[in-house]
Every structure is written in C-alpha cells, then in structure tokens.
Length: 180
Image: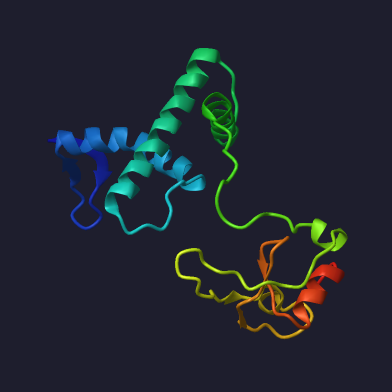
C-alpha cells in the first residue's frame, strides 16, 4: 500500500491505495488518449455482430500504433487523419483490381437501329418443340414513358429486334419514336 498524496477531508488522514492501482492509474493515460484519438475517426459501424466490432476495434488500434511508430521512425509530424488517408491510398494503389464488366442483365443502352432499319409487322414466335405460342410483356407498355405503365402480355414479337410488342400502337411507337 502506498500513499497517494491526498487527504481525506472528513477524517484528515492520508489516503492510501494498493500499488497495482497506482501503476494502473499512471499507465491509463495512454489508453484514454488512444481511445480519444480513435473516437474521432471510428471505422466501427452499426453492426449486431460482436466479432465484427472487435475486429474493427483491432484495426483502429493497429492503425493508431502504426501512426505512432511512423512518427517516431521518420520524425515527420502529420495528423492522424492524414496518416489514415495516406495508408488507405497506398493500400488501394497496391492491391486494387479493376472490376470486370458485367456479363449478365439487361443491356445498358437502347438499340438505335430500331429507328433506322426497315421492320416488317410482328410475327408470332413458335417454339420448335411444341409449336405453341409463348406470351411475354410488351416492352412499350411496360416502360410507360408516354402513358401509364401496364404489364400487358403479348404473343407478338418484332423478329428483327427480338422484342415483344403489341401490334397496335406499340409496334409503330417503338420503331418511330426515340422516347416511346
């Protein structure tokens, strides 16, 4: 037990504490300072998974330790925020891989040839196996730019464009208007 240098106001006696408590209090300032610095640039998100929170806390602590070591080794004084930005930039430059273009899904742009080519009236597509007619949603009715959107089914398709369209008026609108 060691004296703390403080006096109890009621009894007038000197306060004493165990040595381990005094050592903890002396060293605790660095932990408080680290927590304060990390509180300004937290990468922890609202997550319910406890292990994610611990992982992100460890990342924050590792970055802070790296910043302190960098400052001691180089002697350069940069802000902690700037250090984090430089670290992220360097990691992305070294390990970034460009995204591959998407191979699935809808095409990104409309086919402009639909306005220039000559199109014959729609045909009813036949499946080879059964000879039965298939129904699909009309592209013009579904887009709904000029009128209210409908999910109208049609059995007709423009064979040149491979697009399901109603005979009237959608076939003409699709091939004559830029914004159908």
